[in-house]
Image (tube, rainbow, N blue to C red; front, side, top):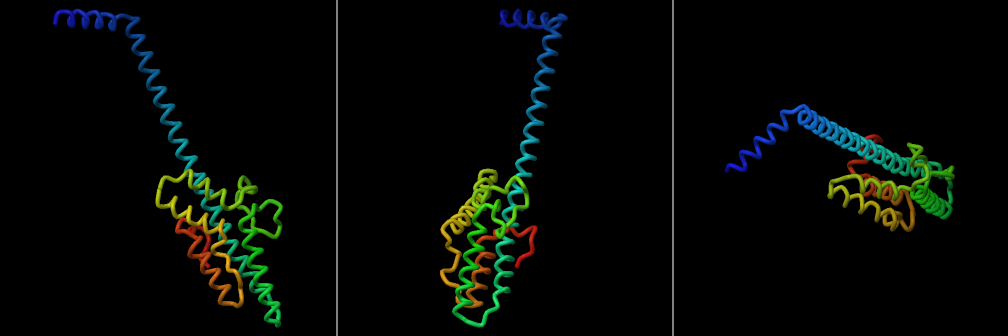
Length: 190
């Protein structure tokens, strides 16, 4: 017990010297400065992550909305009396707009347009993959992965658009299978 008391006394005497006080205050100031910098960095990082998630959600939602509205505009523009020509036109238009949707907007003048310039050279799937890397909700990640699969595999694209009902079914599938709840905030539901 005597040794501990002697060590404490020596430590206390050192701390009460000018040099001891200066050393402790420097350590404390350094600790608080370091802690503040780390806290600020963490807050800034979270803000940037939230901003990037919001931008990706808006971009993805905008492209899905454009797919739907462009399909509807093209559908309404088909005005032919010959059923065979009409079916051929519907098939071609549906596929053209679908593949425009999957492509990057750059250089695709008849395709879909990006909302943010930084996404102009990226396709819809790459945006979704980045979004997956940023969100923490495992259920949302799984939903987005399913949407990616449907886009890549062309599972939603009908083999044949024979009539108006096939067209409406396609639009309905896009709305129900591609537009997750997170992508129904900024653009009206069709």
